[in-house]
Length: 489
Image (tube, rainbow, N blue to C red; front, side, top):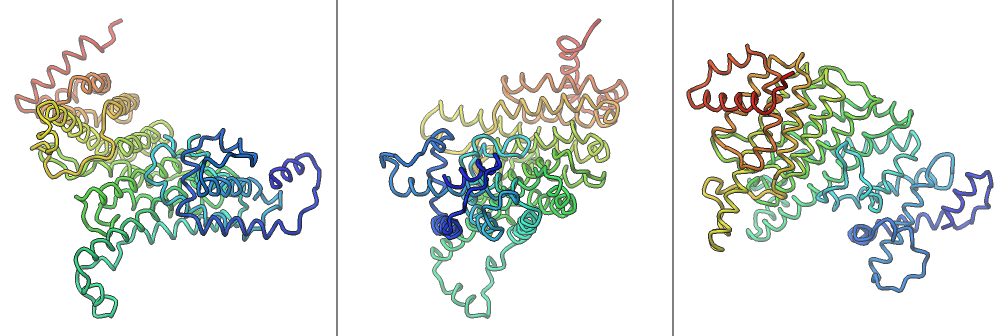
Protein backbone atom coordinates (compact mmCIF):
# COMPACT_ATOMS: atom_id res chain seq x y z
CA UNK A 1 0.00 0.00 0.00
CA UNK A 2 2.84 2.41 0.80
CA UNK A 3 4.52 1.79 -2.55
CA UNK A 4 1.32 2.37 -4.49
CA UNK A 5 0.51 5.50 -2.49
CA UNK A 6 4.01 6.87 -2.96
CA UNK A 7 3.83 6.26 -6.70
CA UNK A 8 0.45 7.99 -6.94
CA UNK A 9 1.67 10.99 -4.97
CA UNK A 10 4.79 11.22 -7.14
CA UNK A 11 2.59 11.32 -10.24
CA UNK A 12 0.90 14.43 -8.78
CA UNK A 13 4.19 16.09 -7.90
CA UNK A 14 4.05 15.37 -4.17
CA UNK A 15 7.23 14.05 -2.56
CA UNK A 16 6.31 11.82 0.37
CA UNK A 17 8.87 11.21 3.15
CA UNK A 18 10.38 7.76 2.86
CA UNK A 19 10.21 5.41 5.88
CA UNK A 20 13.70 4.40 7.03
CA UNK A 21 12.74 0.72 7.09
CA UNK A 22 11.34 0.60 3.56
CA UNK A 23 14.55 -0.77 2.02
CA UNK A 24 14.75 -3.53 4.62
CA UNK A 25 11.07 -4.35 4.02
CA UNK A 26 11.68 -4.64 0.28
CA UNK A 27 14.54 -7.08 0.87
CA UNK A 28 12.35 -9.02 3.27
CA UNK A 29 9.63 -9.44 0.63
CA UNK A 30 12.16 -10.64 -1.94
CA UNK A 31 13.72 -13.06 0.55
CA UNK A 32 10.31 -14.48 1.47
CA UNK A 33 9.46 -14.99 -2.19
CA UNK A 34 12.76 -16.72 -2.77
CA UNK A 35 12.21 -19.03 0.19
CA UNK A 36 8.69 -19.96 -0.91
CA UNK A 37 9.09 -20.00 -4.70
CA UNK A 38 7.93 -23.63 -4.90
CA UNK A 39 4.45 -22.67 -3.65
CA UNK A 40 4.00 -19.01 -4.51
CA UNK A 41 2.19 -19.62 -7.80
CA UNK A 42 -0.71 -21.56 -6.31
CA UNK A 43 -2.94 -18.74 -5.13
CA UNK A 44 -2.50 -16.42 -8.13
CA UNK A 45 -3.36 -19.20 -10.58
CA UNK A 46 -6.65 -19.81 -8.79
CA UNK A 47 -7.53 -16.18 -8.17
CA UNK A 48 -8.79 -13.74 -10.75
CA UNK A 49 -7.69 -10.15 -11.17
CA UNK A 50 -10.63 -8.80 -9.20
CA UNK A 51 -9.83 -10.87 -6.12
CA UNK A 52 -6.16 -9.88 -6.44
CA UNK A 53 -7.02 -6.18 -6.33
CA UNK A 54 -9.84 -6.52 -3.78
CA UNK A 55 -7.60 -7.51 -0.87
CA UNK A 56 -7.56 -4.82 1.82
CA UNK A 57 -6.28 -7.03 4.60
CA UNK A 58 -9.64 -8.10 6.02
CA UNK A 59 -9.96 -11.62 4.72
CA UNK A 60 -11.71 -14.33 6.64
CA UNK A 61 -8.76 -16.71 6.44
CA UNK A 62 -10.59 -19.18 4.24
CA UNK A 63 -7.76 -19.20 1.75
CA UNK A 64 -5.42 -21.02 4.14
CA UNK A 65 -2.05 -19.94 5.47
CA UNK A 66 0.09 -20.83 2.47
CA UNK A 67 -2.24 -19.36 -0.16
CA UNK A 68 -2.89 -16.16 1.80
CA UNK A 69 0.80 -15.48 2.39
CA UNK A 70 1.77 -16.38 -1.16
CA UNK A 71 -0.92 -14.13 -2.59
CA UNK A 72 0.18 -11.23 -0.37
CA UNK A 73 3.82 -11.74 -1.34
CA UNK A 74 2.99 -11.72 -5.04
CA UNK A 75 0.90 -8.56 -4.65
CA UNK A 76 3.84 -6.92 -2.88
CA UNK A 77 6.12 -8.03 -5.73
CA UNK A 78 3.64 -6.57 -8.19
CA UNK A 79 3.80 -3.22 -6.38
CA UNK A 80 7.59 -3.41 -6.41
CA UNK A 81 7.58 -4.07 -10.15
CA UNK A 82 5.37 -1.06 -10.81
CA UNK A 83 7.60 1.10 -8.60
CA UNK A 84 10.90 0.00 -10.15
CA UNK A 85 11.08 2.69 -12.84
CA UNK A 86 14.22 4.83 -12.68
CA UNK A 87 12.10 7.99 -12.31
CA UNK A 88 10.32 6.64 -9.23
CA UNK A 89 13.52 5.79 -7.31
CA UNK A 90 11.56 3.69 -4.85
CA UNK A 91 13.37 0.39 -5.39
CA UNK A 92 17.14 0.16 -5.72
CA UNK A 93 18.65 -1.45 -8.82
CA UNK A 94 20.09 -4.41 -6.92
CA UNK A 95 16.68 -5.09 -5.39
CA UNK A 96 15.07 -4.95 -8.82
CA UNK A 97 17.51 -7.53 -10.12
CA UNK A 98 17.00 -9.71 -7.08
CA UNK A 99 13.23 -9.53 -7.60
CA UNK A 100 13.61 -10.39 -11.29
CA UNK A 101 15.69 -13.44 -10.37
CA UNK A 102 13.03 -14.62 -7.91
CA UNK A 103 10.24 -14.10 -10.44
CA UNK A 104 12.17 -16.17 -12.96
CA UNK A 105 12.13 -19.00 -10.42
CA UNK A 106 8.37 -18.62 -10.09
CA UNK A 107 8.00 -19.03 -13.85
CA UNK A 108 9.32 -22.58 -13.85
CA UNK A 109 5.99 -24.32 -13.12
CA UNK A 110 4.13 -22.05 -15.56
CA UNK A 111 5.71 -23.36 -18.77
CA UNK A 112 3.18 -26.15 -19.18
CA UNK A 113 0.23 -23.80 -18.53
CA UNK A 114 -1.37 -22.97 -21.87
CA UNK A 115 -3.03 -19.64 -22.52
CA UNK A 116 -0.48 -17.41 -20.78
CA UNK A 117 1.01 -16.29 -24.11
CA UNK A 118 -1.23 -15.10 -26.92
CA UNK A 119 -0.95 -15.59 -30.69
CA UNK A 120 1.60 -12.78 -30.93
CA UNK A 121 3.78 -14.33 -28.21
CA UNK A 122 2.85 -11.68 -25.65
CA UNK A 123 1.22 -12.32 -22.25
CA UNK A 124 -2.56 -12.53 -22.27
CA UNK A 125 -4.91 -10.99 -19.66
CA UNK A 126 -4.97 -14.40 -17.98
CA UNK A 127 -1.29 -13.93 -17.10
CA UNK A 128 -1.85 -10.62 -15.29
CA UNK A 129 -2.36 -12.30 -11.91
CA UNK A 130 0.64 -14.63 -12.28
CA UNK A 131 4.39 -14.10 -11.81
CA UNK A 132 4.60 -13.68 -15.60
CA UNK A 133 2.45 -10.55 -15.43
CA UNK A 134 4.51 -9.20 -12.54
CA UNK A 135 7.75 -9.80 -14.42
CA UNK A 136 6.28 -8.13 -17.50
CA UNK A 137 5.60 -4.95 -15.55
CA UNK A 138 9.06 -5.09 -14.03
CA UNK A 139 10.69 -5.48 -17.46
CA UNK A 140 8.66 -2.58 -18.87
CA UNK A 141 9.83 -0.32 -16.01
CA UNK A 142 13.44 -1.54 -15.92
CA UNK A 143 16.29 0.80 -16.79
CA UNK A 144 18.75 0.13 -19.59
CA UNK A 145 21.35 -1.61 -17.41
CA UNK A 146 18.77 -3.93 -15.80
CA UNK A 147 17.25 -4.82 -19.18
CA UNK A 148 20.70 -5.66 -20.54
CA UNK A 149 21.38 -7.77 -17.45
CA UNK A 150 18.11 -9.67 -17.96
CA UNK A 151 18.79 -10.21 -21.66
CA UNK A 152 22.28 -11.56 -21.05
CA UNK A 153 20.96 -13.88 -18.35
CA UNK A 154 18.23 -15.27 -20.62
CA UNK A 155 20.69 -15.89 -23.44
CA UNK A 156 23.05 -17.68 -21.08
CA UNK A 157 20.22 -19.76 -19.63
CA UNK A 158 18.95 -20.74 -23.08
CA UNK A 159 22.42 -21.82 -24.12
CA UNK A 160 23.00 -23.92 -20.99
CA UNK A 161 19.50 -25.43 -20.74
CA UNK A 162 19.36 -26.63 -24.34
CA UNK A 163 22.81 -28.21 -24.12
CA UNK A 164 22.77 -31.98 -23.46
CA UNK A 165 23.71 -32.90 -19.92
CA UNK A 166 26.92 -34.86 -19.56
CA UNK A 167 25.57 -36.64 -16.52
CA UNK A 168 23.13 -38.62 -18.67
CA UNK A 169 25.79 -40.84 -20.17
CA UNK A 170 25.30 -44.53 -19.54
CA UNK A 171 29.05 -45.23 -19.45
CA UNK A 172 30.39 -45.39 -15.86
CA UNK A 173 32.88 -42.65 -15.13
CA UNK A 174 36.26 -43.14 -13.49
CA UNK A 175 35.53 -40.31 -11.06
CA UNK A 176 34.03 -41.09 -7.63
CA UNK A 177 30.71 -39.43 -8.51
CA UNK A 178 30.39 -41.56 -11.62
CA UNK A 179 31.22 -44.73 -9.68
CA UNK A 180 28.60 -43.91 -7.07
CA UNK A 181 26.03 -43.32 -9.80
CA UNK A 182 26.88 -46.65 -11.42
CA UNK A 183 26.41 -48.43 -8.07
CA UNK A 184 22.83 -47.19 -7.66
CA UNK A 185 19.92 -49.49 -8.29
CA UNK A 186 17.91 -49.02 -11.50
CA UNK A 187 14.85 -47.54 -9.71
CA UNK A 188 17.00 -44.98 -7.91
CA UNK A 189 18.84 -44.05 -11.09
CA UNK A 190 15.54 -43.72 -12.98
CA UNK A 191 14.07 -41.52 -10.26
CA UNK A 192 17.10 -39.23 -10.22
CA UNK A 193 17.14 -39.06 -14.02
CA UNK A 194 13.44 -38.14 -14.06
CA UNK A 195 13.97 -35.42 -11.44
CA UNK A 196 16.95 -34.05 -13.35
CA UNK A 197 14.97 -34.05 -16.58
CA UNK A 198 12.11 -32.18 -14.94
CA UNK A 199 14.50 -29.61 -13.50
CA UNK A 200 16.26 -28.99 -16.83
CA UNK A 201 12.92 -28.70 -18.66
CA UNK A 202 11.44 -26.26 -16.12
CA UNK A 203 14.54 -24.05 -16.28
CA UNK A 204 14.32 -23.98 -20.06
CA UNK A 205 10.60 -23.15 -19.95
CA UNK A 206 11.22 -20.24 -17.57
CA UNK A 207 13.99 -18.90 -19.82
CA UNK A 208 11.69 -19.11 -22.85
CA UNK A 209 8.92 -17.22 -21.05
CA UNK A 210 11.42 -14.51 -20.09
CA UNK A 211 12.65 -14.41 -23.69
CA UNK A 212 9.08 -13.82 -24.92
CA UNK A 213 8.77 -10.84 -22.56
CA UNK A 214 12.07 -9.35 -23.68
CA UNK A 215 11.30 -9.85 -27.38
CA UNK A 216 8.20 -7.66 -27.03
CA UNK A 217 10.17 -4.67 -25.64
CA UNK A 218 9.01 -1.29 -26.92
CA UNK A 219 11.08 1.25 -24.99
CA UNK A 220 13.66 3.02 -27.22
CA UNK A 221 16.52 2.14 -24.87
CA UNK A 222 15.35 -1.47 -24.61
CA UNK A 223 14.98 -1.72 -28.38
CA UNK A 224 18.57 -0.67 -28.91
CA UNK A 225 19.78 -3.49 -26.66
CA UNK A 226 17.32 -5.98 -28.16
CA UNK A 227 18.28 -5.09 -31.72
CA UNK A 228 21.96 -5.65 -30.96
CA UNK A 229 21.24 -9.09 -29.44
CA UNK A 230 18.50 -10.12 -31.90
CA UNK A 231 20.73 -12.35 -34.10
CA UNK A 232 22.01 -14.29 -31.10
CA UNK A 233 18.54 -14.53 -29.57
CA UNK A 234 17.10 -15.74 -32.89
CA UNK A 235 19.77 -18.43 -33.15
CA UNK A 236 19.20 -19.66 -29.57
CA UNK A 237 15.41 -19.82 -29.94
CA UNK A 238 15.70 -21.56 -33.30
CA UNK A 239 18.05 -24.14 -31.77
CA UNK A 240 15.54 -24.95 -29.05
CA UNK A 241 12.68 -25.19 -31.55
CA UNK A 242 14.42 -27.52 -34.00
CA UNK A 243 16.24 -29.69 -31.45
CA UNK A 244 14.97 -33.27 -31.28
CA UNK A 245 13.32 -34.49 -28.07
CA UNK A 246 16.51 -36.34 -27.03
CA UNK A 247 18.35 -33.05 -26.55
CA UNK A 248 15.53 -31.37 -24.66
CA UNK A 249 15.35 -34.06 -21.99
CA UNK A 250 18.22 -35.86 -20.22
CA UNK A 251 16.05 -38.98 -20.15
CA UNK A 252 17.02 -39.64 -23.79
CA UNK A 253 13.61 -41.28 -24.24
CA UNK A 254 11.39 -39.39 -26.67
CA UNK A 255 8.74 -42.12 -26.60
CA UNK A 256 7.95 -41.64 -22.93
CA UNK A 257 5.09 -39.30 -22.21
CA UNK A 258 7.09 -37.10 -19.83
CA UNK A 259 9.95 -36.46 -22.26
CA UNK A 260 7.52 -35.96 -25.15
CA UNK A 261 5.43 -33.47 -23.17
CA UNK A 262 8.51 -31.50 -22.07
CA UNK A 263 9.79 -31.38 -25.65
CA UNK A 264 6.40 -30.22 -26.93
CA UNK A 265 6.19 -27.42 -24.34
CA UNK A 266 9.75 -26.30 -25.13
CA UNK A 267 9.02 -26.11 -28.82
CA UNK A 268 5.75 -24.25 -28.25
CA UNK A 269 7.37 -21.64 -26.02
CA UNK A 270 10.33 -21.21 -28.39
CA UNK A 271 7.99 -20.67 -31.35
CA UNK A 272 5.88 -18.20 -29.35
CA UNK A 273 8.99 -16.27 -28.33
CA UNK A 274 10.05 -16.14 -31.98
CA UNK A 275 6.59 -14.81 -32.87
CA UNK A 276 7.01 -12.03 -30.30
CA UNK A 277 10.40 -11.21 -31.82
CA UNK A 278 9.06 -11.25 -35.37
CA UNK A 279 5.99 -9.11 -34.63
CA UNK A 280 8.04 -6.44 -32.88
CA UNK A 281 7.64 -3.81 -35.56
CA UNK A 282 10.60 -1.77 -34.29
CA UNK A 283 13.10 -4.50 -35.20
CA UNK A 284 14.58 -5.07 -38.63
CA UNK A 285 15.53 -8.47 -40.01
CA UNK A 286 17.69 -9.38 -42.97
CA UNK A 287 16.58 -11.79 -45.67
CA UNK A 288 19.06 -14.37 -44.41
CA UNK A 289 17.07 -14.56 -41.16
CA UNK A 290 14.17 -16.18 -43.01
CA UNK A 291 15.68 -19.65 -42.73
CA UNK A 292 15.81 -19.53 -38.92
CA UNK A 293 12.17 -18.46 -38.57
CA UNK A 294 10.88 -20.99 -41.10
CA UNK A 295 12.91 -23.88 -39.71
CA UNK A 296 11.54 -23.16 -36.24
CA UNK A 297 7.96 -22.91 -37.53
CA UNK A 298 8.26 -26.22 -39.35
CA UNK A 299 10.07 -28.08 -36.56
CA UNK A 300 7.00 -29.37 -34.63
CA UNK A 301 5.74 -31.29 -37.68
CA UNK A 302 8.96 -31.78 -39.68
CA UNK A 303 9.24 -35.47 -38.73
CA UNK A 304 5.71 -36.45 -39.84
CA UNK A 305 5.37 -38.68 -42.90
CA UNK A 306 2.21 -40.09 -44.46
CA UNK A 307 3.55 -43.59 -45.06
CA UNK A 308 4.61 -44.44 -41.50
CA UNK A 309 3.08 -43.48 -38.13
CA UNK A 310 5.00 -40.74 -36.30
CA UNK A 311 6.43 -41.41 -32.86
CA UNK A 312 4.90 -38.18 -31.55
CA UNK A 313 2.51 -35.53 -32.74
CA UNK A 314 2.49 -31.89 -31.65
CA UNK A 315 -0.22 -30.77 -29.29
CA UNK A 316 -2.95 -28.43 -30.47
CA UNK A 317 -1.24 -25.51 -28.71
CA UNK A 318 2.10 -26.20 -30.44
CA UNK A 319 0.36 -26.61 -33.80
CA UNK A 320 -1.37 -23.27 -33.24
CA UNK A 321 1.90 -21.57 -32.25
CA UNK A 322 3.56 -22.75 -35.49
CA UNK A 323 0.54 -21.56 -37.48
CA UNK A 324 0.62 -18.08 -35.96
CA UNK A 325 4.35 -17.74 -36.65
CA UNK A 326 3.84 -18.67 -40.31
CA UNK A 327 0.84 -16.35 -40.56
CA UNK A 328 2.82 -13.47 -39.06
CA UNK A 329 5.62 -14.12 -41.55
CA UNK A 330 3.18 -13.91 -44.45
CA UNK A 331 1.35 -10.82 -43.22
CA UNK A 332 4.16 -8.75 -41.71
CA UNK A 333 7.41 -10.06 -43.23
CA UNK A 334 6.34 -11.39 -46.60
CA UNK A 335 9.74 -10.78 -48.17
CA UNK A 336 11.27 -13.33 -45.81
CA UNK A 337 8.83 -16.00 -47.02
CA UNK A 338 9.43 -15.13 -50.68
CA UNK A 339 13.17 -15.51 -50.14
CA UNK A 340 12.92 -18.97 -48.58
CA UNK A 341 9.74 -20.32 -50.18
CA UNK A 342 10.87 -24.00 -50.18
CA UNK A 343 11.28 -23.91 -46.40
CA UNK A 344 7.86 -22.32 -46.02
CA UNK A 345 6.11 -24.96 -48.12
CA UNK A 346 8.01 -27.67 -46.28
CA UNK A 347 6.52 -26.36 -43.02
CA UNK A 348 3.04 -26.30 -44.59
CA UNK A 349 3.52 -29.89 -45.77
CA UNK A 350 4.38 -31.06 -42.26
CA UNK A 351 1.33 -29.35 -40.78
CA UNK A 352 -0.97 -30.94 -43.36
CA UNK A 353 0.48 -34.41 -42.75
CA UNK A 354 0.24 -33.99 -38.96
CA UNK A 355 -3.39 -32.97 -39.38
CA UNK A 356 -4.04 -36.19 -41.32
CA UNK A 357 -2.52 -38.38 -38.62
CA UNK A 358 -4.29 -36.50 -35.83
CA UNK A 359 -7.65 -36.92 -37.53
CA UNK A 360 -6.96 -40.63 -38.10
CA UNK A 361 -6.05 -41.00 -34.42
CA UNK A 362 -9.24 -39.27 -33.31
CA UNK A 363 -11.36 -41.45 -35.59
CA UNK A 364 -9.67 -44.65 -34.43
CA UNK A 365 -10.07 -43.70 -30.78
CA UNK A 366 -13.75 -42.86 -31.21
CA UNK A 367 -14.39 -46.17 -33.01
CA UNK A 368 -12.57 -48.13 -30.32
CA UNK A 369 -14.49 -46.37 -27.54
CA UNK A 370 -17.83 -47.13 -29.10
CA UNK A 371 -16.91 -50.79 -29.63
CA UNK A 372 -16.02 -51.75 -26.04
CA UNK A 373 -14.22 -50.48 -22.95
CA UNK A 374 -11.42 -53.00 -23.44
CA UNK A 375 -10.57 -51.89 -26.94
CA UNK A 376 -10.82 -48.23 -25.93
CA UNK A 377 -7.91 -48.72 -23.53
CA UNK A 378 -5.70 -50.12 -26.31
CA UNK A 379 -3.92 -47.96 -28.86
CA UNK A 380 -5.07 -48.03 -32.51
CA UNK A 381 -3.08 -50.64 -34.48
CA UNK A 382 -1.90 -48.10 -37.06
CA UNK A 383 -0.49 -45.82 -34.38
CA UNK A 384 0.65 -48.32 -31.79
CA UNK A 385 3.70 -47.09 -29.90
CA UNK A 386 2.96 -43.39 -30.47
CA UNK A 387 2.88 -41.26 -27.33
CA UNK A 388 -0.52 -39.65 -26.78
CA UNK A 389 -0.82 -35.96 -27.57
CA UNK A 390 -1.20 -33.54 -24.69
CA UNK A 391 -4.22 -31.79 -26.23
CA UNK A 392 -5.33 -33.57 -29.40
CA UNK A 393 -5.56 -31.58 -32.59
CA UNK A 394 -9.11 -31.02 -33.71
CA UNK A 395 -11.15 -28.77 -35.94
CA UNK A 396 -9.27 -25.71 -34.74
CA UNK A 397 -6.10 -27.09 -36.31
CA UNK A 398 -7.94 -27.81 -39.56
CA UNK A 399 -9.19 -24.22 -39.44
CA UNK A 400 -5.61 -23.02 -38.94
CA UNK A 401 -4.46 -25.00 -41.98
CA UNK A 402 -7.29 -23.57 -44.08
CA UNK A 403 -6.45 -19.97 -43.15
CA UNK A 404 -2.78 -20.61 -43.85
CA UNK A 405 -3.57 -21.89 -47.35
CA UNK A 406 -5.85 -18.92 -47.97
CA UNK A 407 -3.14 -16.47 -46.89
CA UNK A 408 -0.64 -18.33 -49.09
CA UNK A 409 -2.92 -17.85 -52.10
CA UNK A 410 -2.90 -14.11 -51.44
CA UNK A 411 0.83 -14.12 -52.34
CA UNK A 412 0.17 -15.55 -55.79
CA UNK A 413 2.56 -13.24 -57.63
CA UNK A 414 5.61 -14.40 -55.63
CA UNK A 415 4.65 -18.00 -54.77
CA UNK A 416 2.77 -19.19 -57.86
CA UNK A 417 5.69 -21.37 -58.98
CA UNK A 418 5.34 -23.45 -55.80
CA UNK A 419 1.58 -23.94 -56.09
CA UNK A 420 1.90 -27.34 -57.78
CA UNK A 421 4.07 -28.68 -54.95
CA UNK A 422 1.64 -27.53 -52.26
CA UNK A 423 -1.29 -28.96 -54.18
CA UNK A 424 0.53 -32.29 -54.59
CA UNK A 425 0.86 -32.46 -50.79
CA UNK A 426 -2.90 -31.97 -50.48
CA UNK A 427 -3.51 -34.77 -53.00
CA UNK A 428 -1.17 -37.07 -51.06
CA UNK A 429 -2.95 -36.22 -47.80
CA UNK A 430 -6.38 -37.05 -49.25
CA UNK A 431 -5.01 -40.25 -50.74
CA UNK A 432 -3.12 -41.77 -47.82
CA UNK A 433 -4.74 -40.13 -44.79
CA UNK A 434 -8.20 -38.89 -45.84
CA UNK A 435 -9.72 -36.55 -43.29
CA UNK A 436 -13.04 -36.95 -41.60
CA UNK A 437 -16.09 -35.16 -42.94
CA UNK A 438 -15.90 -32.24 -40.49
CA UNK A 439 -12.15 -31.69 -40.85
CA UNK A 440 -12.26 -31.99 -44.64
CA UNK A 441 -15.16 -29.53 -44.89
CA UNK A 442 -13.12 -27.10 -42.79
CA UNK A 443 -9.99 -27.52 -44.94
CA UNK A 444 -11.50 -27.47 -48.44
CA UNK A 445 -11.93 -23.66 -48.79
CA UNK A 446 -8.19 -23.32 -48.27
CA UNK A 447 -7.52 -26.04 -50.86
CA UNK A 448 -9.76 -24.27 -53.36
CA UNK A 449 -7.87 -21.02 -52.71
CA UNK A 450 -4.66 -22.90 -53.47
CA UNK A 451 -6.14 -24.16 -56.75
CA UNK A 452 -7.13 -20.61 -57.63
CA UNK A 453 -3.55 -19.54 -57.01
CA UNK A 454 -2.23 -22.03 -59.60
CA UNK A 455 -2.23 -21.35 -63.31
CA UNK A 456 -2.92 -23.92 -66.01
CA UNK A 457 0.83 -24.56 -66.23
CA UNK A 458 1.05 -25.72 -62.59
CA UNK A 459 -2.15 -27.79 -62.85
CA UNK A 460 -1.00 -29.53 -66.02
CA UNK A 461 2.41 -30.20 -64.47
CA UNK A 462 0.79 -31.83 -61.43
CA UNK A 463 -1.59 -33.86 -63.61
CA UNK A 464 1.23 -35.12 -65.81
CA UNK A 465 3.31 -36.30 -62.85
CA UNK A 466 0.46 -38.06 -60.97
CA UNK A 467 -0.54 -41.71 -61.11
CA UNK A 468 -4.16 -42.69 -61.94
CA UNK A 469 -5.27 -42.44 -58.29
CA UNK A 470 -3.72 -39.00 -57.90
CA UNK A 471 -5.27 -37.84 -61.17
CA UNK A 472 -8.72 -38.90 -59.98
CA UNK A 473 -8.30 -37.03 -56.67
CA UNK A 474 -7.06 -33.95 -58.53
CA UNK A 475 -10.02 -34.13 -60.92
CA UNK A 476 -12.44 -34.27 -57.96
CA UNK A 477 -10.76 -31.23 -56.41
CA UNK A 478 -10.94 -29.29 -59.68
CA UNK A 479 -14.59 -30.20 -60.08
CA UNK A 480 -15.37 -29.01 -56.56
CA UNK A 481 -13.46 -25.81 -57.24
CA UNK A 482 -15.41 -25.14 -60.42
CA UNK A 483 -18.73 -25.91 -58.75
CA UNK A 484 -18.52 -24.21 -55.37
CA UNK A 485 -15.58 -21.80 -55.24
CA UNK A 486 -14.61 -20.25 -58.57
CA UNK A 487 -16.07 -16.81 -59.11
CA UNK A 488 -18.10 -16.39 -62.28
CA UNK A 489 -18.90 -12.79 -63.17
